[in-house]
Amino acid sequence: MQDIEIDTLLADDIDGLLALQEANQADYGGTLSARMPRAFFQAALDGMPVIVARRDGRVVGFLVSAPKQPLPEAPVVRAMLRAWPGSEHAYVYGPVCVAAEQRGRGVAGAMFAALRALLPGREGVLFIRSDNAASLRAHAKMGIRQVASFEHAGATMLVLAYDG
Image (cartoon, rainbow, N blue to C red; front, side, top):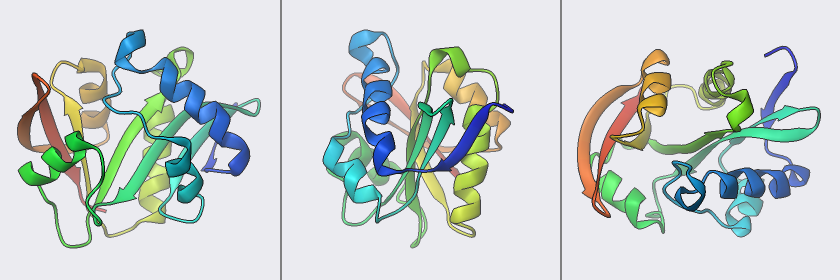
């Protein structure tokens, strides 16, 4: 982890972040459940934090936070919030994505710690496909608990939450 920089999103990170997001879509064997467009990340520069992990200036991980209101556009996020709306000031956590060559090195945990430091005292709500064992293990190590589940697009999704 010494060679990994954890920071908030910069405009120069967006192309690398989009490339990492695309490489981790289900179409390519990844586990991400949605694509977030460039406009989302450009708006995030002035909104809730997006945490980025960089190695040698290249984006090797990202973790998104977003307000739960107004209701997110992604149907899977709307379904999650129906299953577990969270507290009044809760926010949506995720997706979190780490480049394959950086997994198992604590990158996700470091990004999570940075996000929690920026949003203290607020509940984060996220979902993970029930068959994504690696992500479930990583989030369990971070102390995030399962609070609900729902079905979406033929898959069982687990809702997890944590207190800030």
